[in-house]
Length: 138
Image: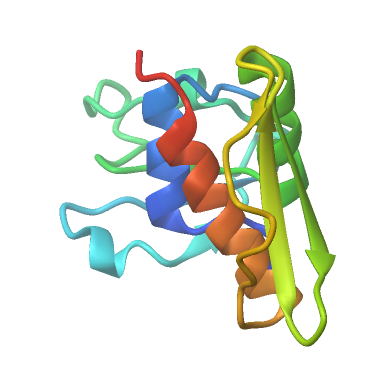
């Protein structure tokens, strides 16, 4: 089930871009990002947003580095709605590929002829990383 959620590093990048949609899961935060790989369901909450997370210790509940963990489908939908960045993952001759198209710029941002050598899930992860790269910074 954990593979359905974006990685901790990508969740942090999404938060920096302004992602504040409801999520079911949260990454436990520490001062070492390489150790933030544990997902949990926050008690007392059904769904939670990044803006709900308290990182200053005010109530003593949350820790620095804590961030919501969106599903991949949530992240792709958010990029479509917020930035007009549409993406798809398909299969080429022997391997998976992905394409990103910007409606605002009316152009393809990736070269569809370049194939990605890996599984569907790996292509999905690479596509998300490219979307993060192409999104305008706050």
